[in-house]
Amino acid sequence: MLNSLYLLLYHGDLMEFSKLFNDSLKYPTQNLHALIVFGIFFLLANLTSFYYKFTGKLDIGTVFILQIIALVVWFFISGYLLSIIKSTVEGSDDVPDISLKNDAVVGIKSLVIVVVYSLLPGLIIGFILSGFGLIGFGDVSAIDIENIHGSLSHAVTTTGILSVVIGALVSMVVLLIFSSLLLMAECSLALTGKIKTGLNFKKAWKGVSAIGWGTFIIWDIILFLIVAILALISSLITQIPIVGIFIEYIIISPFIAMFVARATGLMHLCE
Image (cartoon, rainbow, N blue to C red; front, side, top):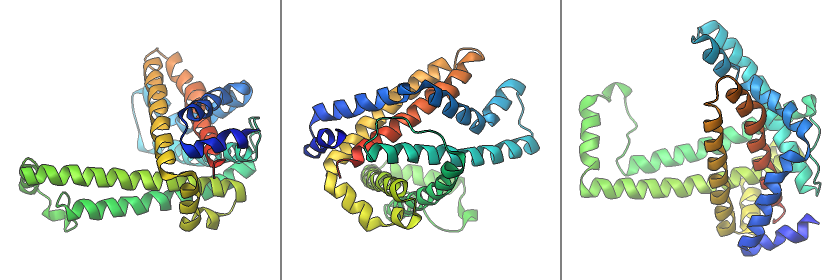
């Protein structure tokens, strides 16, 4: 049912984009029990924020323990999101059950994929900015106020402004490319459970190309805007004393995550 509908996205039909995102926004509400249980994981992953909010202090020992707990919980969260992507690509409209063991294993693999696909654009952007003279790779001890002042002075010149603009544009393109490849790699990992398929850049590139880079970038931008709006709503709700932060982590944060996973799975159907 979904395949015939979303293959039309290949042509960049905005009406089909609307259907895709409407489906994704409704998806988390289909199983409120799963949404709340998933939200508890988000709550556990953000215990440090709770600790600081209610105690007003951050002692190193406690924070260290809470961060270890958060790291372990994030493995479950990442793994469950990939299970949503997998069930979506396989044609299911149902919200999958949480499997602690399977989700944790897949979540650890997902971390490897994310690190690799984040490290590469970081290095590329670093070299690009260095080439435009916006940053330098050298002895850290050489970084002082005079160097910073000189960089700022350079930036306000015509050449400096042009370098900043070009550097920023090129960096944005690099980020868009790798974010698209990362999403396709995550889909491959979700379907096979194998890290090597996720690290197959050629396969990821072919996957995005099959959908169309223009279509994928438009999808990226729309997704970003929707998430930004939901994040804004979340920030307003957190202003409600005590209750607000619980609503954010137990309902809104898992809702956003499930929405993105569903949209990613539906987008992969276009491949």
